[in-house]
Image 1 (tube, one colour):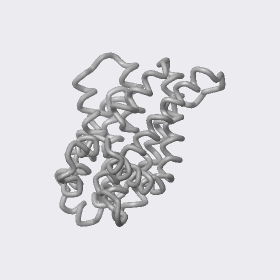
Image 2 (cartoon, one colour; image 1 turned 120 degrees about the vertical axis):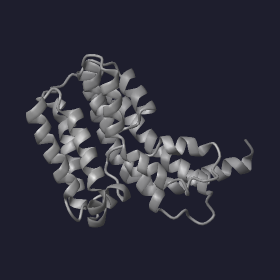
Image 3 (cartoon, one colour; image 1 turned 135 degrees about the vertical axis):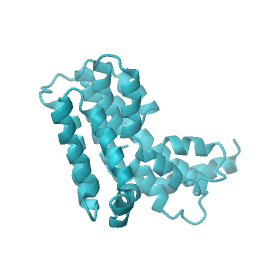
Image 4 (cartoon, one colour; image 1 turned 60 degrees about the vertical axis):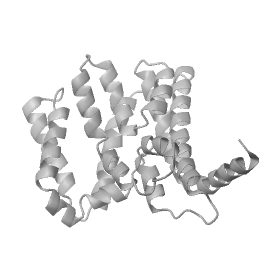
Length: 248
């Protein structure tokens, strides 16, 4: 690596860092909780460390604890993972033009597209004199590192510190409640939130608490597909794609 190339990367990294500081606070806190949650669920710190590095999907990673503790169901696991992270497909499509002609970096950029990274890279104007590709790459890498280090540290601390963890299993429920409330506040019309709530209640009554999640996701997908045009017209999907939550 030449000194000139190194200087370009360092300059882009330093330019990107201030924009990611608010995300650092959210990711580190949630990452710590996730790591501790994994530990009290019976998993070594290697699990949150490797999953935060390779999966990098906050709500999915929390849900994977339940998946790992349940009976093996690969097809159901695959479908649930795809549905939980389905919004990332739209993120990738929206970033095709911005990430064009960035060489090998674009592969990592697509992988690291979480809500917060999408919000920053989609809306920020690259500072004058800063390489566009390395700026986007730095934002993505920093956010990924925040989640990775927080999750790893949480897993290590969970195994070293003996404290009362009663009620910690509620963290995943709390996370989804926060995401639901934030989404509610962003939508002009609450069509998507009502659809999700309706689908959850119907599936819970019909299939019971152990099997209602997959039917819920299917019903939500069908409802949003059938009523896509009125929902988009009301701004119900636009806010979901254009703004992020504290969830990788």
